[in-house]
Length: 302
Image: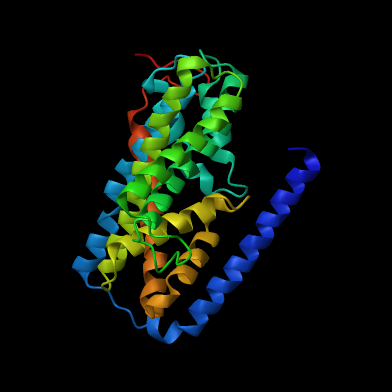
């Protein structure tokens, strides 16, 4: 991507972010009388916030995926790849939404993987994670579980679903086939990373469904699907820190048909709190376990 295209993408992302924030603000203002009266019980709030713990643990699936991707280019131990992912995770909330990616690269520099390998691994991960989300969305859509969210998607049944997922995985492999530094048997190693991303997406969607159903009942599959799709929207918006604004706007729009606007707004806000707290817990747990003396570009003392 040349400089001009990069600038277009960044400014386009900023425009989308602005529109999303205005939309969310408008919805909050429109339903303020309903959401301002919400008073959670202590047990309800405790249950909701406690969801940040399993969410933080589910992020380790992405850390394992990152480890496998890095090892396509050079042999790096989990003692380096896991901290490079987990310790820098909270940096995605900084403006630009790239500080965590830069941080991972800085952490891994100076050891087995080259600077070029780090760049290639980062680009591959940027493609693998949304591919994992796409596999789940396509599968759920094909099963008819998301018929309210994706009315245009044909219900092809179990056999058709298996076929669609296989095609999606096959298409996913086309990217590494073109990527330098990935040869022969290494191509098959991309599949576990996609699978790990897909399982994480199920955890992510399940977290949103759990938050929502602690407030009001709604179909779990629909809520989970909406959570995954909204995450994908936020992920693909250039420059939106942690997908903030765009993810919330997508959730509100996707779930408008439920006619539970107040609950959707509250659940959306709580989901942001849960996921942010989960990122913080992942950071703290990883930072406290990084051996003293381990540093970006260095080798841990173990």
